[in-house]
Structures are given as C-alpha cells and as structure tokens.
Image (tube, rainbow, N blue to C red; front, top):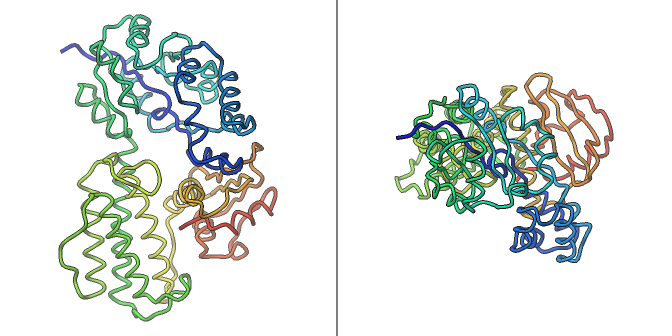
Length: 433
C-alpha cells in the first residue's frame, strides 16, 4: 500500500464553523421563514457560479438579496462570523510537524483569501486551494486533480476529509483515502487506521475529563442524598425539595442515556431515591465511556455527538450538586476551569438554542465574560455588527452562578467595563432552559 504523504482538509464544517443561530436571528429580524436565505444561496446554479469563479462573492450576495426580496438581510448574512476549530487546527499542526504536507481544498469564493488570512490559516497549513480559482468545485474530479498536480502527488498518497459525504466522490475516483468528517476524534482514528501516527488529541482527553468530572459530581450528589433530609427546601429551585431535585436529575440522566444510546433503559428502577439516582447516573456514565467522543447521536446543541452529552451532563449535574449542597446547609464551591466552560456553554450553546427554539428574542449587544482564575473568555454574540458593548470580569464560579440565576449580580465581585444596560438586558433574558 502506498504511504500517505499529504492530508487534505475541507474548510467549512471541518476547519471553521458558521453558527446557525446567526442565520436564524437574521431571518427573524427580517421576517423571513427559517431556512429562506440558505435555500436560495446554496441552490444550483447560483452556488455553482460563485464557487467556480464565474461571479464574485459580492455578486452572489446581491443575487441572494434580489431572490429573497431583502438586500439588507442578505448583506447581514454575508457578514456573519465564523469560528476556527482549534482542535482540527492543532491536528493540522501535529501532522505538519511530523513531516506530512497539509492543505485545504474548499468550494469557495473570491472572499476565501481574506477570510483564511483573518485567522492565520496559511501559517497552519502548506497550501489553500479554492474552487473559485481552480474553476471546478468538489466533487468534480478535476478539482482534486488540480490539487494533486500542484502537490506533485498521486491519489493514493493523499488522505482527504470533508464533512459532506457527497463531496468525497472525486477523491475516491483518484484513489485518495477519504474520511467523512463528523468530529476530530473520528478523524484522528481514521488517520491512524491509514497508517498515520497521531496522538489521541485534546478532544479525546477533554471527553474523558468531562466523563471523569461527571462521575465525581455524581458521587457528590449521591453523598448529599445519603446523608441529607430529602424534604429540605432547595432555595435556588423555588418550590422544590431535595427529593424533587433528585427526581429531576435522575430523569435528565435517563433521558440523556436514551439520546446517547438510542434506546430507553429497561432494567428495573430501585425503590430507594439514592439508589435510583445512582443506578441511572452509572448507566449514563458507562454508556459515555463505551463510546468515542464523536459517536453520532442526537444532542441538544451541535455537534450531535456523545462528546456534547458528556459536557452537557457534567454541567447539568454540577449545577444541581451545588443546589443540593446549598439545600442541606453546605458551602458548595465550583472548580474554576469547569465553571469557565460552563459559562462558555451558557453563552455559546444554551442561549443560542433558546433563540433557535424561539423561546427568547436574540440580543442585539455582544457581552464578553472574562475569568482571572481560568483560561480564556466567553462571548455572548449579539446581532449588532459593532464589537462588544460590555466586558465583565469575575471569578468563573461567580459568573456561572449569575448566568444560571443562582446569584444576583450585585452579590458577586465583578468588574464591568462598558454599557451596563447591555449586561442587564442579557441577564434579564432566559439564557438557559
């Protein structure tokens, strides 16, 4: 078997991601039916004209505006932000450091050069090929032939990954080894099976860490149930007792297990409350441990993988452990890194889901949350084109409890730089389910 010498990545859906909530917010703001813009933008022959360079990106956006009858909506759609995938880029760095040629082949427009420059992609891969310059778009075999000629390689020497399975056909015809991308962990596994020695990667280790932390939170919640008064009032969940909270979390774990496995648990439920909670939580943890992070399943926010459920149930169980410990007179504390990721989940995943489901109106102003006790920051992206209206700095634990309605803002120590009213508006919005 010919050895792999180069790894070729798709761009959109693999190296960078657009967020559907931005499109949904634009369509709501302009009274357009959901899916209207992209149904027009990505329909043939218009999409073929722009991705093969027969029209420019600006002409494409104008044509979309004409066809939907709203130029402003089309322009807003054309300016939507994207997020580079840090884990895929880290994998590209690893491959390049190991001596493999790395490149990108995208069905792109004349906007691609500026877009990839904006996040330094040329510094992370050896070459970027866009269909608008080639004149042919995937899955046309001529697009792939162009790349092989440019790299001076034969098909069997190249591994290609794309999030659209239909785009793989031309690569297959030329003998490339291909992989339908659904997540970075699956891509790493596919590379290993093709003889490329790659590490487990941060995605896999993060997944395992989420499961381990979930198991620790389960232990803590069980301990409260074993020693605490089940009739104790839960101040942070008005109208609930500790027994109500335990029943809720048990039901959530059961539901999540069904989403992860595609089946409902059929073993008998123990009569004792603590035993019932423990059995359901153990069943969920075992199901997650038995699957890779990118195992496909329905999830409440993207991506639809087991990794999403490990993260979601970690945060769900952690916040309810805090509720339970407070209910029995404890002084609960949240680990800073876990709390920081919990903040990122609220503003980057749960709030967009609330908007997507029509439960809340999209916020216009962007709010940035910063943590001096944890890495990174979190951004609640508004619909306005301007930069952040306000930046809020505080301990990750405090910020998470504020966002989940467990603490009033005035009860925690934070620094607010910018428009306080934008922050107040965000906190008055139901950001979480």
